Image (cartoon, rainbow, N blue to C red):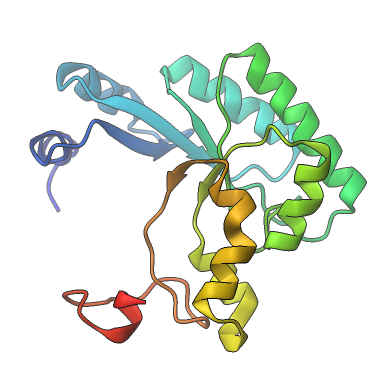
Length: 190
């Protein structure tokens, strides 16, 4: 609720150091002015379908002065690409990002090239320098209710070891994001 200015002010007052938004937002110039006024850093996210989209998103994030870019490289890019196609997409994206001094934090997300721990491990064999923003609730949904939290965390280790960010969502194995009330439920505690 409220204006963009009120939201930015409330973010600063709550003690946060930055604001994250998607690339290509119509209100971006207004937000950038407010972030400078309130001395907040900018991070950006994107959902590129093609390498051309990724290049534009990297350039947009650089132009806006973002500290990093979180791509959810999704369908048809991710889950339905061969390992070689996925590797080429990541390699080429990371080259453009390096040329623009723009850190990429690949979001772990179903229906994307980081769709599961297995897909991620295949990528890390060829691109060990990848960094991530973990949204592990997606992996809980991909895994379903069949896995224990302990087994899941073990499988997630390679991503967690390379995380620069974590999105805090709670999944029940069938839904990505649940309302956990005051956090005292068994699911929230696990």
